[in-house]
Image 1 (cartoon, protein in one colour):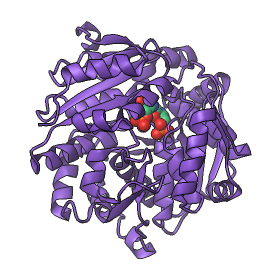
Image 2 (cartoon, helix red, strand yellow):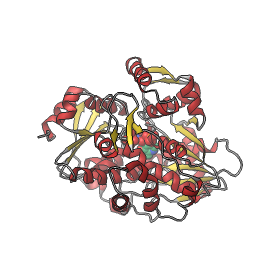
Image 3 (tube, protein in one colour):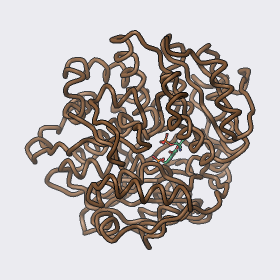
Length: 466
Ligand SMILES: Cc1ncc(COP(=O)(O)O)c(C=O)c1O
Ligand SMILES: N[C@@H](CCOP(=O)(O)O)C(=O)O
């Protein structure tokens, strides 16, 4: 399998190189040159398989040329062996129509573990084949950071620098990052928003001298391998609910558009996805883009769903590329315009392509609280605020009778205990293995959100290429 850049001028690469590169050298994002298709028989054959076996079947076409099926199985077994639920991503029924897909049974209690545990294994495997060292630079609104740090802490050939917006992640999220004491882990709180952090990370990649010197790589969902691993649970859930004989709809709490883009990929591969709901909080650039074609950046508003306090959604570029007809140079121009003016209109082709599968909703704090209460009172389920944004949108979805709606439960409620307590009166406890999180010592740097400050900090601590 070869991968091409959404901006059309970076070289096509195989899976191993794409995984280690992160962002394409022309500033674009890598996507497969074509989507592998699963027949109905292929999908039917996934029934009854374990999560690991499903993962191997779904991901095998994407890794050809870089990993054998046995190698992929070995890495998936190691990655998903660390999950606390045997089903890895279990389904929970709420009523006759609504389901939750619990994605938070990994080591750091958010859906990010599903992809990052595998990415840690992939990095290790690929680095063992070459005499090289990676410098990972990442941006987090709370969950990617802890999951990535858990996945690579202590790995010899990797340094990780993780930028989070100071004061804008939950206490549990921050501590999950800043209490990890491994020599290769560097946490940085920046004075700014997640969007500022993400822009700094992209700027480091777009500086060829810096990026080559330190051999930069990415753990954010700009890295294709992240999304590939997330495609698996759409198949796993849909097959359990009757695919390919039955269509399934998904509602996805959305920020950087990675998780819901993985659902789009599953549909391109042949999974019968009836609809994908893009559920945003009041930071609603994606809702405006899908509903009206208006992709213009607003001010980031702080909410009780901090992981989705995002106004520039990296992976939206992948959708604009694919749904808009795969015109790399034209998209490069469109994105350049956005980077200058912070606003753009979607083309008619992009809007029409997206409308085939996506709908969207903006969920405010009251609606989010009501969804937490509905799940609690009606089904005895304590859900986190991000999941509640997805569930609120799911309850407004219009689908044909008999189509189940699956809301992706993206985080454990204990990660956002204050918001859950406000809605339910219950303070969800942390799992016992994390019981001492608040007793552990924290360490992190505080830096201004400037390219000079961040690159100087990284350059002092990272290992340059020999
Ligand atoms: C708990 C949680 N829910 C939802 C999201 C949104 O996912 P995505 O950025 O892939 O759209 C995030 C962050 O990305 C998150 O951490
Ligand atoms: N919500 C995310 C933001 C980063 O998104 P990513 O999926 O691109 O890594 C977080 O928790 O950090």
